[in-house]
Amino acid sequence: MVRKIIFYENHFIKFYQKQNDKVKSKIQYVFELIKQVERVPEKFLKNLEGIEGLFEVRIEYQSNIYRIFCCFDEGRLVVLFNGFQKKTQKTPKKEIEKAESLMKEYFQSKK
Image (tube, rainbow, N blue to C red; front, side, top):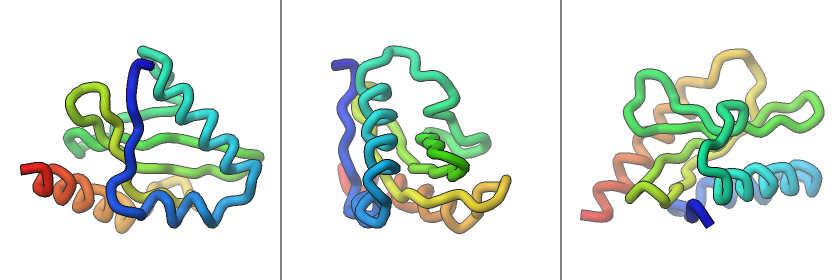
């Protein structure tokens, strides 16, 4: 295993539980990829521009687009934050801000 995925608090879990089985299995598929592939294609995992250390897991199922924010810790640990279904071209600012503050909290809580 290349990476390990953990959840920070329960923001991701709440989002995940609302999804149908097909979407859940697509999310699982992308997580397996992130865990096992050294260089994950940008189609599935992309660095958020302008925000140091914040990434988005990118999931597409049928014509729906889902995003799950995360960061890396200690190189091999992927920490999941909030997830949402994307309805527009631009990622909602409030989702990014939420992820940013969760990331800060996560690193603060480790100190």
